[in-house]
Length: 98
Image 1 (cartoon, helix red, strand yellow):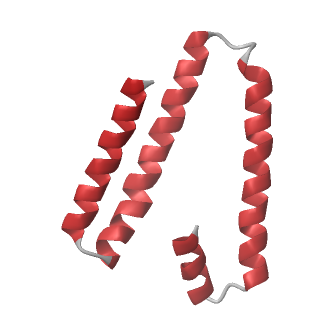
Image 2: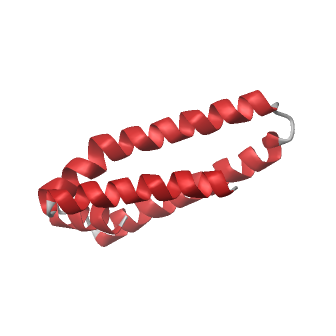
Image 3: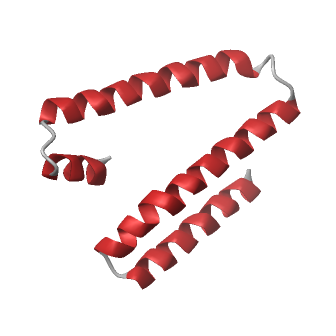
């Protein structure tokens, strides 16, 4: 959010507009999380696994298409690769420890 906000500010967005955009995203996410919590009990295990996989795929797509190219452009590309690998290994390790 900080990197995106800094870029929006450089492109001429006002502080109020940036704040309202992030605030509305927070509210929408909270509503989605609440609905997910309420509906999770009525869904089967297969549906939950499918939704988790879909969410993980969406996150990987966003990271690969937006965040990695920006990080490589703005810093040392070898540090970006190592950091990305460390993040994925940490995520897998936590999932295995679950």
